[in-house]
Length: 82
Image 1 (cartoon, helix red, strand yellow):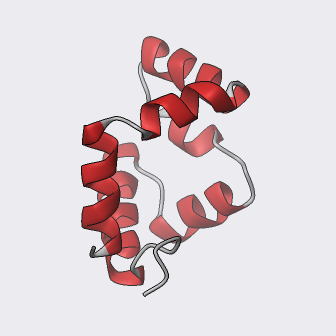
Image 2: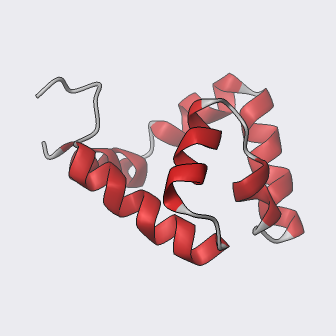
């Protein structure tokens, strides 16, 4: 498995969980995220979380820092099946 790709089963499971939580069909959520549209996800967040998400989108260095944490690495390994 290419380590840059998430296992489709894991991705679909994650989309299912998130879509139920925010009330958006999984296929719409997937299409929106692939198109770089985060409105569906942001609309279900509280204001503080939405603000932090917006800040992360605009600051690639912040995303890089967050993704380098042990917790993020563990989630990535679980999703990719490593």
